Amino acid sequence: MTERPSAPPPPNRRRATSPSAPPPGRAAPARGAKPEPVAPAPAPPRNERVRATTPHESPAPPATSVSVRPPRPPKAGSPGQARPARPLSRHFRALQLLAGAAVVIVASTAVAWGARRYIVSSPRFAVRTVLVDGVQRRSAEQVASSGGIEVGKNIFTLDLELASASIATDPWIETATVTRKLPSTVHVSVVEREAQALVAIGGDLYLATRDGELFKELAEDDPVDLPIVTGITGEQVARDRAGVVIAVRRLLDVVEDMMRAGIARRYPIQELHIERDSSVVVTIGKEGIALHLGQPPYRDKVGQASRVLTELAQRKASASVIFLDNDAHPERVVVRMK
Image (cartoon, rainbow, N blue to C red; front, side, top):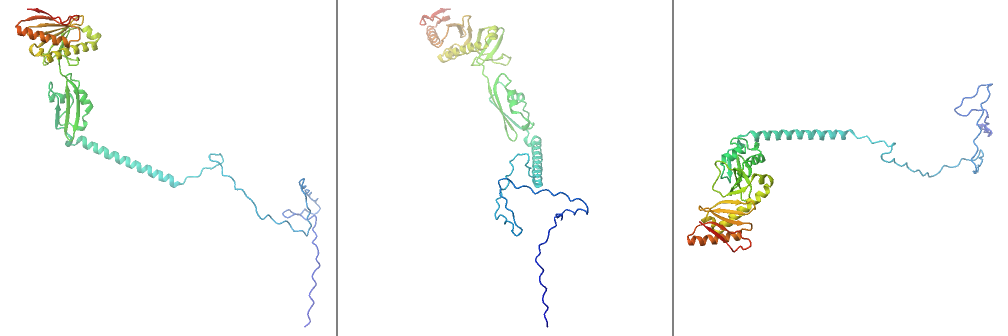
């Protein structure tokens, strides 16, 4: 076989680029139309060397590494920062907690209401016994009644403080304490006042304690076998009640000294009189012997009066007045005989 010679390769011709060819993406101008002006190429920046590339020169290789700084996160609270959306499950969980708390509160309220209804209506907690201690002038029934304490009444409906205050309004009662003893007992502890003297003010008589306090006006069932303090006016009480209390207390100190010396046992004390100059005169015994004690202090004068009365009793003599008020010469005693 005869081989055909292969066709020679075409000559290496350079493809001519028409200067009027439109760039890619732009339509070719119509025939006869004026060509659009071509924008001149931008001038190279100053102070930079521009190296022209020949058609045979390959482009510069790309950079092998690029340093990229990540953007900084925006600060909290900045206007451009968007708040993250809360998941729906979080709100749902909060609603579940609120609903659970509401159920617990309602259940607790119902239980408490039921328990209260039981304790205020159950006959187990009805008052059956009232114990009253410390009374002499008043009966247990009077004390319980004044405090609003009734048998059969629910023990929890009793206001303890109010009952104590109501009982203490009785002038004979100084303090009162009311307590519960479950299930059905009320205990009342009372401290009564003790009258030590009668104080005459104007035309009225008042009971006085050992401290000189005038706590009540004399009533029909009150004690009357007490020393009587005279010489105090209503004007003095209105003007200086504290001073009157001190004066009565001082007279009761004299009574205590006379009891300690043994005079009160032999000669009961009848009257303690305060003169206008604040001196004291004590009337004792059935004979009505007047002891002029003068100004305080009185303890030594009471001891001297005891010795004089003992000597008079030994002599079987009766005296009407004994003067012990010589403060310049306290050893001198003047006795006026009957």
